[in-house]
Length: 309
Image (cartoon, rainbow, N blue to C red; front, side):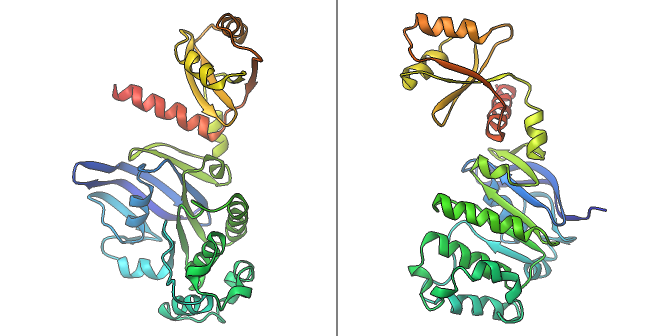
């Protein structure tokens, strides 16, 4: 039987004239690796600050392991591990001094809970005498995660932990998260990277403080209703501009070296190919593809914009 670890119910948060969170509701089950996905300004950090009792919602209710963020903040702070978006450890303390300090704050020792962090800490242990401020981005990331785990939290909250680190460190970090979720530890992680969404058990897609969808990555992809095409040609810049003005274009977005395009009903890629040739494009390549989470996010965002218009 699944048990609810985190509950968000009709949560809203305002900053002056900015509505950062607009009536957000979802639940996270115990032991789940749950992703909060969206661009900068979507509301991810505001929601995490509410869950970590650093902010109170203006409306609605939030609870962690049954404790309310308003009245039970002391209990919540004992059972969560939090990695904020910016490196927040003590720059002038060494690796081992930072870890020892955080263990002491929570009434434990590094030795008592070393098994919790062993797989992570072992990678930075050779640098344990180095000051935290002198570590690379990837090593800072591993130290911050070790400090967040040293008191054996029941819920781990990570705010964009891989932003600004290299691709290898990103991959290693997510491998660590996947290993960690084998226990009853609930992990909430926010990210602007859609490829990381694919690694979560479930994700919540956020845009401008609104919840667009909550589901598994596979079900979000399955709900995509359009035929998607990958398209490229010799001059990609001109290609995108021309497609934006093509009467049969439904949507077009740049994805890496390709454009992802959907066509209005009844129009075929063969007709598009002919039109592009007439426009003078060369080395045209069109193929049917399956949507990723990012394609689904863009589709949902477009629908939201149309509903507001």
